[in-house]
Length: 307
Image (cartoon, rainbow, N blue to C red; front, side):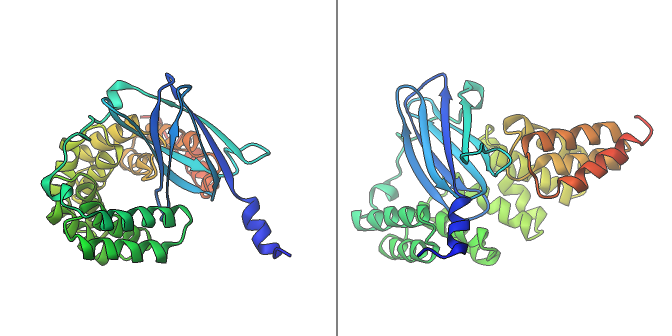
């Protein structure tokens, strides 16, 4: 007999069903934004794809179209967006203006030298992340970098897991090892910028986050982190610029750029603009746990003199 607690947990799983618009064959991957998870699938000629048995949470969806590049989108998997059968339907618009260029044909000599045994460990780690077996995934990743210290992607995954489990110093070290292995790699660059923001080292974070926005101007995460960096440096004017761009690129982004923007507007006395920004946030995050507090803040801002 299955324990009642396990039955309750299983009942919370969701199926995510998506369609690429326009319909395009592509590889689609799903990654936990705030907790370790990874899964991938293919979208068929009709542009449809599906991920089953997802735990509630926030995910980053990455669509890769060979020859065009990739598009990223934040997905909230919660009861508020699912139907009675715990299905979530999404449409992903493939906007050329938001594509990051396809650089898959550019492979470094270090990457070419990675042995098959290390790649096999990496694939096993991804499978374990899909099954949410974090300890097993970490073990395979450590074996991968022991076999191939130049395996930048494996170091980056170790850093991501460390960050998501709040081991920030370890995360910083892993991201630095990843950049040492491949100085041109983007993921550890933007991730290192993020962990430095979390650690409050804004002057140091500035270099990495600025470089990330320049290297991949279509990445909402880079712009959001640059905005956070400028908030930490007490430059709200510059923070606004980057946070607005983050919202434009991905209005549901897991870093919640609207919340910082609303604080900036409220501090300037722009009450109506702050309220509009918070309402935009709630439109993209139905069922947000702190919704009642935000609604109260919006009401208070609406009651303030218009600016």
